[in-house]
Length: 67
Image (cartoon, rainbow, N blue to C red; front, side, top):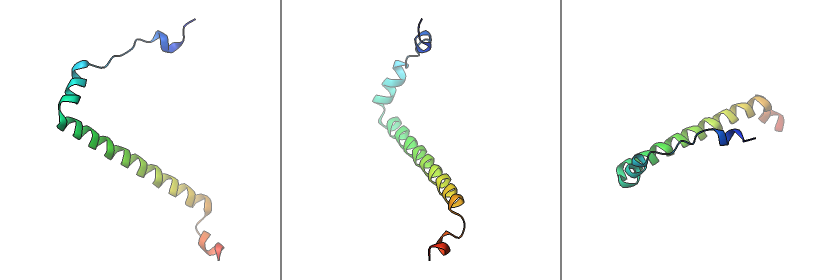
């Protein structure tokens, strides 16, 4: 019996899109810059989520309890 991933048809990348990516430096720079911004936005959102949850777990007066 074949696995599920073997049954699915592979989707190959369009050769012309890849050639365009490697031959056009402006397109490459723009795509890398967009990817960098998107990663930074995602990491920032994750850190904000983590900060909110840590504050909720610790409580509002955690500094007062320290000293």
